[in-house]
Image 1 (cartoon, rainbow, N blue to C red):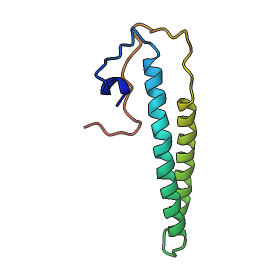
Image 2 (image 1 turned 45 degrees about the vertical axis):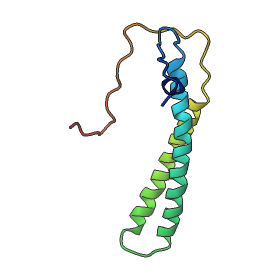
Image 3 (image 1 turned 90 degrees about the vertical axis):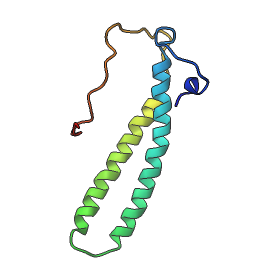
Length: 109
């Protein structure tokens, strides 16, 4: 939740076109920390699994490494978003704001 919402203020893109940029940056900053916690926990558990011997362990190891790389890549991308500085000349593009499509592979209900 944004500080504006907590204070009962409404932010309007027309009066502050950088609001959405700051909101995205703030969400990315939080997500960087969240992904870091998830990644560390996942790595620790993967190390524990590597100490076991069972059918299919290689699959878990390979896919676990792939997941760790994906989390690391996501964290780097989020860090870039979190450190973005809004330029002074932000303009609202009329008629362009549209909701994003769902996540790729997401099942519609």
